[in-house]
Image (cartoon, rainbow, N blue to C red; front, side, top):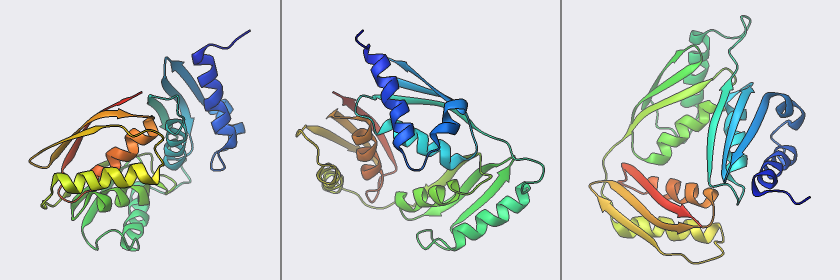
Amino acid sequence: MRQSHEESLRDSVLREFESNPHLDASTLDASVDAGVDGSVVTLVGTVASLAEKLTIQSAVESLDQVHDVVSHIDVKRLEESDPTDQELRDVLAHVLIWDALVPENAVGLDVLDGWVTLAGIVASESQRDEAEQAISRILGVRGIDNRIEVAEASMTIRDVRRAIDSTLQRRAAHRSRKIDVIVDDGVVVLRGEVESLDQRNALHAAVAHAPGVDAVSNELVIC
């Protein structure tokens, strides 16, 4: 009997779990379930760390047939023997200090029940992202509220176009598609067609990291 599109997509998600070297498929079978509605995948379950949760989401987003991912994955609460919020805060503070890509003394943090709030001002979106990524890999972090602000800088449409072209080239986009760019006071609007959710997210990230970009409105459509 021929599989439906949704059954085929769910099988692809499960195969991705099994083939990803950063995931333990035997554990995921019992802790995470993937529901499919059209080309939208909904993930439900509980995992041991934020890093594992983000890896699962990224793995599913990389599949060509996936147009969106809705994540309801929770990160387990710490056991009594694990670090307190204050101990976790001290560890994370040292992680940021020793990260060469995060400006010294630019980012502060608070921890409550394993949830981390980041605050401060940095020079670029890439520095803002690096601070979040650095602490997301630490066991005990259940979630991150990134309130770091990016200092204002000049930006042109040419800068944004360059970021888009570079990203498409690196990812070997199979078809050349027209992407419209609108810039208004630091906010960039992207419109057009892309081949996958992975490509849509990559373009969003590339534009967000361009100098002077405060926010990105991603209206790209997957075709």
